[in-house]
Image (cartoon, rainbow over all chains, first blue to last red; front, side, top):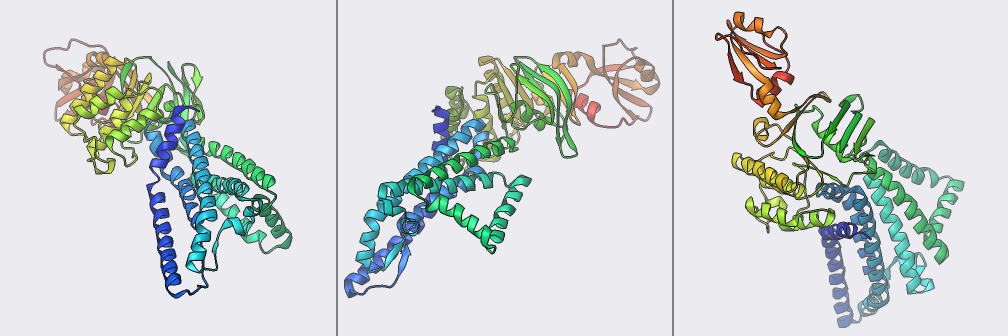
Length: 234
Length: 281
């Protein structure tokens, strides 16, 4: 891979300070809450009927905020530094892949090591996690890692593409279509079934099918985003 | 190297560039002049492939340019563009890592020459310093074509003078095609070799500045003495005050009678006479 693409990815990571800060604050708040519950549980032995969001889910903020930040701010700034659009395009993809992979790994580690400890030591009922909610952990942590990675990458790329096209008419049309799908599909049973089929495909279908469908959609949508980037007036 | 063929760019009903056909050489410093909204920035962005043309072509080394096929040989940066809020040295390093042919030594020399605080973050710099950082990043690129849009925006007189010197230094080190758009006409004329004047999206003038020095002049005197001399000459503007008249000429030199004086027409006056609108004669 060309050095300029890595440089663009590095620059993206360097300039995600707000995402790191926000994620760090949320994690710190959760940790403080955990410590308070642990101390109270240790002192009184009381159990608490509370179920907080697991640490791993907070890490999602980094790629998701990056998907807003890069098209809104970094693209123009990199052009101003003399970067070519192809460099920016591939650099952003590398950023998302690395961010989603790292976050998925952290989320799995957190789920397997920290969450059980926090639940036991804090006397909590449990911790909310997509691994449980979507059943990804049923196939083991390795499969869960890849399932989460593929899903997160798809969501990130969708956000990137939608944000990138907001200064064009078709961006607004896309927004309207997304809202219409949610508003129209949900009340009508056959359409709702189609929507559920799609969501099941990208979330809860068998591991390889879920990963494959997410990565295929990611490739298609990110491919389309190149057309949007090329049409963008800088 | 650069060939514009029937190049047009419209934004809805508004025309940015209107049917420009022109060849630009491999080397030389060009001054691109035009009023606000004349199409300077649009023309530069088209050449750099930042925006697609509505019709016509930009050919760089024979290859058509578009946002999908941005020429690696052309480097364009707007002077008042925003940068990442990083230190000056980090920004220069970032530019070096993102570009294929960046002269880091030259960039650092320029940072030092302009006394830019290399450890200071971009947002903490003055407006002029920010512009200078962008100018340095642009000039340090060794691309065969450099496009600079308002590079001296926010500069004080000393910085402008230094910038002109460094522009020449950069050109001497790497002879190439440099196009500079600016409103500070006479200052850029000190370093530019060629002139492009664009008005309402069309190229009005494509000439050597040395030739203009010879061909652009003012005839001043009593209107009765000046007017007969204008027959057959390309008079681009006149000014009258009572019975006295000044006629701005862009044509071959003549030897007027002693009652009429000839003076040099500055580039700024030439530009104003050409695109400034109405004569007051």
